Image 1: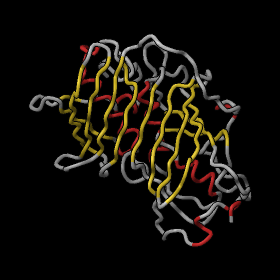
Image 2 (image 1 turned 120 degrees about the horizontal axis):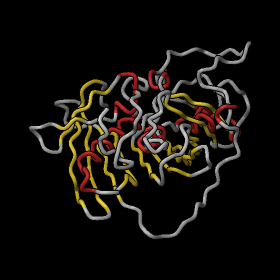
Image 3 (image 1 turned 45 degrees about the vertical axis):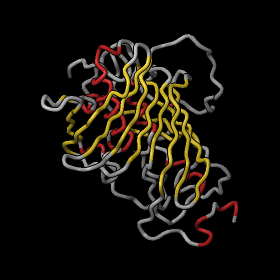
Length: 314
């Protein structure tokens, strides 16, 4: 992998793993501002590539479009609207530099299948470090370290009846370890949506300075449906929470391969849910914050009656 400028700094990660390779955007010599990426189906979640990973691809292309002229400007925030599904395989990323300044730049990118009218559109802000205030008004939850937590990949405890579902490709490349909340088979009646999980790419995109590529934080931020599941509790109703949008704020590069996503669903209403997520590295540093609206889909039919309400409110 060539050391192309990354969204999180001047050089990309030394890692040549799956995620690092996926962030390489090749310029189109015939169309200025256009890049080509072959999206690996191993990011499918479940049927099309994971939205956070696609937002990270947009971030990588925008950083490359800014080039070395942006100096030390790092990706500070991005917002993606998922207008249409983008399948795995060859995709086009069209970028537009809205403004390139000395200390701050704004860029837009649309990721779409070749020939498609729409796809995922992202607006991002890149900026240098500036003088200002220093504080963190959030607290990392008191949870066990990742090494002491069970894995999503572990089987359920013996004797626990739990329906096995086909594996999701994305989770074959990203490991999750629940640190706060309840397992899907736990019959506890919950009173909150608060939950947290450690996430780590199997091939972490570690950069030459030992930090994790911040684009990995963008990708790992888009895993918030668990907070809705935590609030609703166990049930037989199958549902999915595809992203309508995703906003990620980045503060500084993580100093660990594991990222703790501390999530809370603020409200579910009219078939949508609003969720937020604080992202911490293993040193206890807040490295990012994300928010999104997801729309709820029900393969076997929508909830009716008390199925729509958390058990403690029935």
